[in-house]
Length: 99
Image (cartoon, rainbow, N blue to C red; front, top):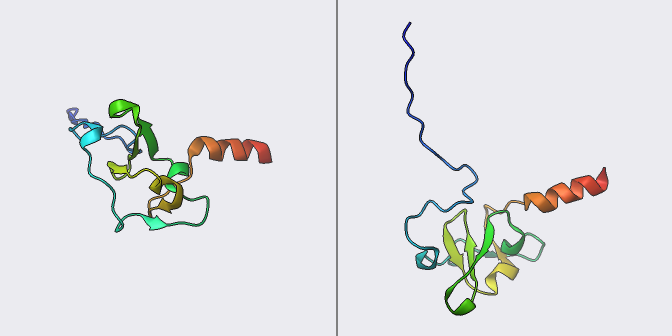
């Protein structure tokens, strides 16, 4: 039986690396259809997909790598989406504290 060649296509499962071709500053903004008010610790800032990127004039861009979109300043403190997942580093730290 002859060995069959399989094409390997890179796919980033956690999507922490942007797959969009345009610059991060050109990403669309998340809107109210995606972001919902949250009164718990489950807000964008504590999400695994949340990142800061340097923007123009030293103003940081707040991004969601799950949705590949920008988050308005202040929204990251009070809103989240249905794709929220715990920050793995914080989750690991909590597990070590319990152990």
